[in-house]
Structures are given as structure tokens and as C-alpha cells.
Image (tube, rainbow over all chains, first blue to last red; front, side, top):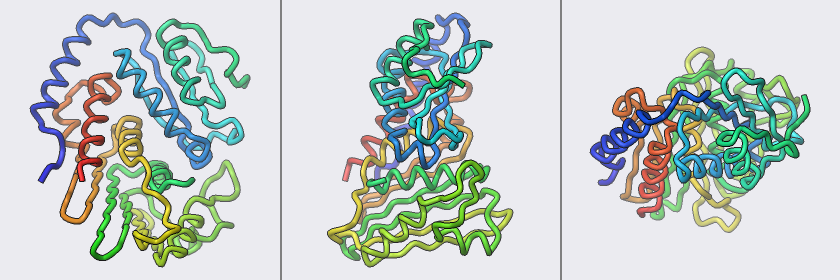
Length: 122
Length: 178
């Protein structure tokens, strides 16, 4: 009966990940926070999350932490994604479709440029 | 929300908000009994009797940012419309369990949708939770245990691109194999 992919596969993943990490410089760790309250999920947050995870996997982007949060009181702006890089102030994005999410990862996280047309001014 | 897997994501988020450290989700499809059953069980802070009884009532919610919670009442209505049910048990301080059943072949039964995406979102965005995530289809069974994966990964985070890929494949293969 198949359960999980084999632990050997996982060991390989771990070795590859360790090797990649050795080459990484400590260039300001990034944190991605996705709104996953009922309002977020109803507005499409799971597809937004999927686009973020797929982009990180495909482009092999290191040092990003992904977390979720509940409703933050701006349901009409969902899906909401917040980005924190190093000690810089948190940037909050609204109406983050999968396409917008991909630009946020590529432009903000990788290149350091805020995607200004989707920022929610707080 | 028009996928059961989105409702599962929503219910699991409630468990996370209830500070659960272990959350078990099981999806069972049985063609012989013509049954689709979803269960979510957590060890979070739970609710007192009054709150647990009222939680399926659309005019009660434990959230503080918005006044009306509609996820569970709507799901209950959807289950009952398909000859099914939604039941919830909770005890303050020990956790909550929710059991939702549908007649699987019912014409109005919501599709399960992308369970692999729901499971992957949960595992990677709340890696500290001990997720126990299952799926059964008649005799086929898939089971994921976060602790086993976490122990093997050691200091490699779940958001590492290789790990994201591994988790994606695990769920894609495990949940689409039947």
C-alpha cells in the first residue's frame, strides 16, 4: 500500500538542499505571509499560495520563509500577501492573483523592487 | 467556496487559529457505501458547549475582526442537501473534531477539488503543526505524517525549493494514484 514517497527520496532532497544552501550568501532572509482566513480563501488565496510555491520551486529561490495568517480586517482586498525582507518595513499587497504573486516573487523578493501598483497603503 | 478541499483548508485554518499542534485531516471516498466523508480533528483550545452548539448557526462566530462566520454553516447546509450531515464536537482545553458526510453520487455534491494543493499549502505555510493528512478511496490509502518528514529534514526548512518540490510530488502522486 503506497503511503508517502520513500524516505530515500527525502534523504536525496535533503542532500541536494544542503549543497545548494552552502553556496548561498546570507543576503537578507525574506518572509512571505499569505492571508488564509475564510475571506482570503474565498477570494482565491490557495491559488495565490500555489503560484508562490511553484515560483520558488521552479526558480530555485533560497532563504524565503512562507507563512499564513488569518483575516487581517481588509477582506475586500484579499487575497493579501505581505513581504518582509531583512529589517525593512513590511509591504502589504492586495488583490494578489497568481500572476501578481509571481511578479512579487520575481521583482520584490529576488530583485528587491516593490511592485508598487499592488501595494495597499497602510 | 465551491470545492470541498477549500472548505478543508478553511477548517484547518480554524484549527491553527485555535493553536492546535496536531491536526488530522482524513478524506474518505467509498463507492460501495456511496459515501464521501471528511474529518478534521485538532488538539487546539476548543470551545465550550454553548459555542460548539452555536457554531453551525450563521449568526455566531468566534472571530473578532468580522461579525459573521459563514464557512461551517454553509458547508452544513451543503452536506444536508446531499443526504449527508455535519457534526462538530468540541471540548474547552482539549480540541475540536468535525465530521462531514455526503452522499458521494448526489448530483449536487460539491467536487472535492484540488486536495493536493490544500495539503501542500498547509504543510509548507504551517510547518510547525504535526499534520496527519490522509486520503482513502475504497481500498486505496494514502497517509502523510509531518513529523516523519520534519525529522528527516533536520535544519532544512519546509520552504526550501527542493522540499516544496518533494511535497508537491508526494501529494500529487499520492492523491491522484487511485
